[in-house]
Image 1: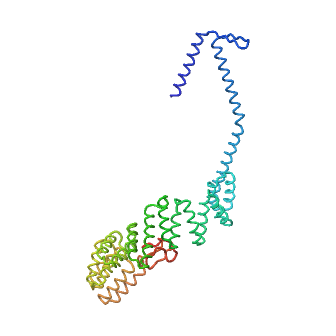
Image 2: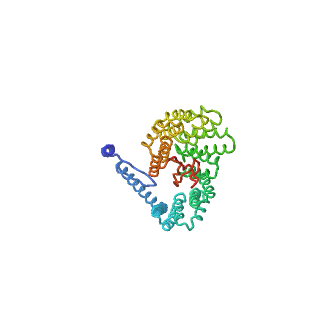
Image 3: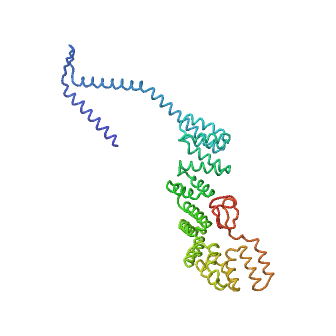
Length: 423
């Protein structure tokens, strides 16, 4: 609408100007180099306009002629880029289909057309990895160019991990991480390699850099920080430095309050230091959120000199902190069996059997039949039911599925860092 109004106003002004000149034709006389020209003002203005149009056309033609080489080069460059991007796109599609040879050919074509290793480097790495023949040599060549150094080291890291070359993987992981600390998944890989090698200080530095550059955040970062602090606490404990071990274990607990191994270690070290009340308070708070047999073990150690009846009372206090916990009821039932409180033991065992039947529950019920009623047949019936029930919870590796006798930072079977879970 604005354009239309502007056009109408401009047209009106031009018409008004033409009419005004037509009403006032006037005369113009020009003397130049012995020449005399007599004409009217409108004719003079029309001649000037014609000259301007002529010069404008000549200027445009000159620009077209003089700019032809630049336009040709620009057209050629645009065509090469289009072909290069097409080769890059087709190469990525070949990677997705597992065609390593085709991807390598397209990677070379894209590299020759685009002349930008930062764009074609990833395709070259993936193609080299698929073909396998010259992957290492090509990746090593990429590490020598600043534009592709990160991709080269990252590719060599992946190959070393597949070959179980942990030393080589750690070396290339360090180099790649130094070049790009925020790369997705890289911080986790480097951290795990450092933890496996026992390089606690390096692992902490990796977490700090990853947090600063956005490579790790949230619960994942907190759990890994808890892991490295817990590992350092265990190392300090082996070196008989209980004070340092307690400080590090507390830091691990603060990093991830739900990390039960750290909580249990803090409580145990407090108990050894004579701070039983503080240890008991810590266990009660943790048991309310995450009931776990490791907490129960430390809780029992706090009253190691107690009688069976005292142990029942102590266990009742812990169970009251989390009445829905099957672990608490099992431990209370076992304490009641020790104190010969048969009815109380049966009540808690029946409750666990109704909610989460397991092999351990059947074993305790069989023991109850033997100890209370001396009924071996009833005990055998309970034991016969045990194999059909789910196994008791244990520290199980999420990577390989193996069961560990106790918690450790790395899986004893496959070496997965932080892979053990209570399930």
